[in-house]
Image (cartoon, rainbow, N blue to C red; front, side, top):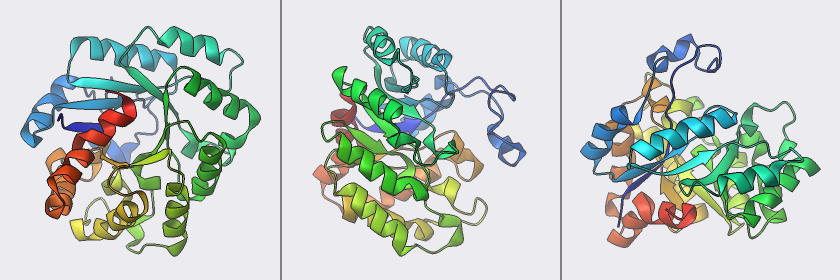
Length: 277
């Protein structure tokens, strides 16, 4: 079975568009293309990846689709569409012509309205996804986990995946019972998966250690089980805190005592099933 990195990004750096990449993150204030990722995947024994949007525009979809047309290592794309638009179904129908476009994401973590995902217009857009067979990536902060559970409960047949384990405050070096309870509550919805990704960027960039991350992985594995978790590097964002190999080593070491079938599911099978790669 193919090994898949289920979460990474490409971009041609634009300091205005990509203003979220501030000077503290200067390590990633440059271009990142498939040619940069390919040797890292090869070194880790990874066969392909899912490229996820980082800009909320349809131009981003065009950019990622162009990369995917030239690089077979991109097995799937998570793009962006205006889910609140009255025209959303027509746009989703248009994207049906691109088989590598598997799903969509909205940067809910940055919205002033923390419960935006539960607004009638947003939910109308989510309803349209299932009509066309698209997945949805949930990008949020911990305060939005409860809203995400309500969203998933409203659409029991819609495949959702939580990005970056819900971005807990790992830098604080303690795990909150509130986050654990919210993760278990969200995981109670069988249509929700979880990417074990993005942890090092929520940790102390200079002083994090693998053992700081273990309790968070423990919680997610306990909540979701081994059939609904998947590996994601969050490269190149991870480079603010760690190399690709360092990120990969954390999960490779953690799951080294799991069965061969469980490792195969985590490092590829679950992503292949979820995104229909």
